[in-house]
Length: 248
Image 1 (tube, one colour):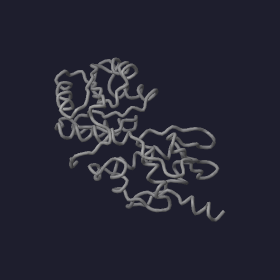
Image 2: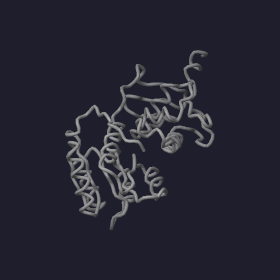
Image 3: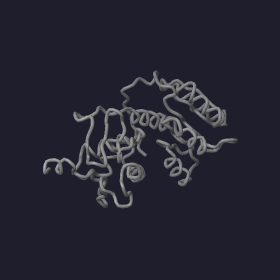
Image 4: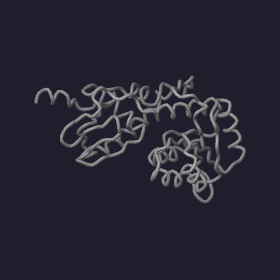
């Protein structure tokens, strides 16, 4: 991944980062480098303590190691997602692709592979915090796609068959950009740049995973999508519902 400066509309010194790791040296390394970037760092040495810290101290982001005693990172993340959408970056071992995919499937927002540089750490943290911020809603705050699906941009939720479905921040941003370009094929690279940031432009697996997550939440039949269509080798297209409205 190519690293670069990542702008943030919120000053770093207003953001608190929880680092969860049972290795004191790793916590000290992360703390030192995030301190230099202006973040406030708090810590937990295991998953049980981390869940309590998240409930009581409300950090803005969690850096979560996978390999921990008592409660590993995966189980901690699973329990965390039952009550919070706080952004999470997983720390994975080098070459453990299955760990990366599993973390993303459980609700992680990103991962960093050990060993990592201080610059990569800062770039990832800033990028994930940026994605957690809601884009400005379009002029139409509530869009009625059809009788089955509508989107409330102010509340960051979709109504599927009369039921409210909450979206995670990255899911929301992806749906936002697809709907904003309804009827047009949006290339993988453009979605990566708009949703994740330009430094992620070579990591197309993010788009595939999150399109699948969205389809599971909004499609009547995710295996035969009605709304988010695949343009093979190019990208994805949200159905042009406005054309249907005009015809009606």
